[in-house]
Each structure stands twice: as structure tokens, then as C-alpha cells.
Length: 185
Image (tube, rainbow, N blue to C red; front, side):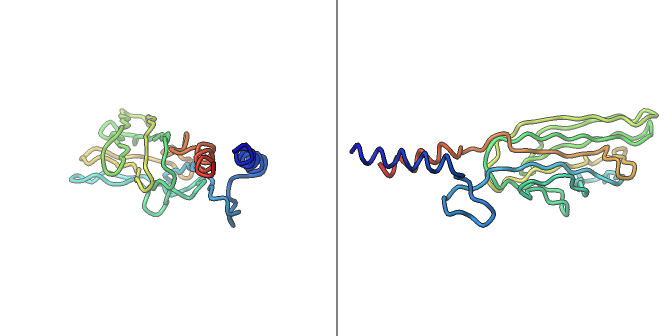
């Protein structure tokens, strides 16, 4: 029994001292990198549809660790289950008749909203949320339907942004390693 425990403990030391995380080719340890982070900006102006919400496609990607954000459709699709932090920033048009009104959705369910009133000036507003996500969950931002809603941007300035990152994974790598060792012992 003592030899089994010692062998398992030695395996933990070897795996921990080495790198228990697969590289791009994979080292065969069964562990993968649990990283996900992105920031994308919107480089156009957008007016709302009168009858239905419009997904905002933040088309210019500044960072996309894990490639979970898709700049073609504006959706973040979770590849690693865990707790995430998201921030949305929107800028209103320069008009007393237009407001920026956008909401962050998780699997098509509204979570938080951002409101900026363009009373004869551009105004910016942000909102931040933490979400528990499972693999495959989708997070996106929509411009709410309405006659007087719209967002503004000037060139590549990035006044309208969508950011998200993994705060911590649902399953910790060390916890998974310990569970595998328990099976061996």
C-alpha cells in the first residue's frame, strides 16, 4: 500500500513539476489549456430595427484567446465551462432623438442592458456581469428594437466594445489530477 501511494505521489510531482497542460500538439496527459478571453469592437454605426432586436456584430477583434468569439456572427460560444466576466460598452448617436439601448443575452435570454441617451452629445455607457456558463452556451449583444435606438462609432476608434474572459473554469486542473490519482490508488 505504501508503494502505491508513493508511486501516485511521485506521478503528481512529475506531472506538476513538468507541464500537465497539453500544448497545441497534445502531450497525452489528458489535460487541456483552460483559457478564453476576447475583446472586439464595432467599427460602424447601426440603427435599430423597428420590430425586432438586431445582434451587434463586433467585427474588429483585438484579442481572441481560445477563438470562442466569432466576428462573423457576433456570438461568443463557450468551449470551457466555468464562470466568465463580460463587459459591454455602447455609444449613442449625436442626437436628442436617439439612444443606445443594447442588451447582453445568454442563450437568447436577456441578462443585462446598457442605455445611453444622446441628448445633443455622444454618450457612452457600460455594464459588466459574471455568468456561469456550460460548454456550448452562447453569449451575444443585441440592439433593442425601437424607432429611436442606434449606436455610433467613428472609424476604428472602438467606442462600442464587447469583452469577455474566463474567470475560473468549472473543473480545476489540479482537482482533475487529484481525482485521477484517487482512481489509481
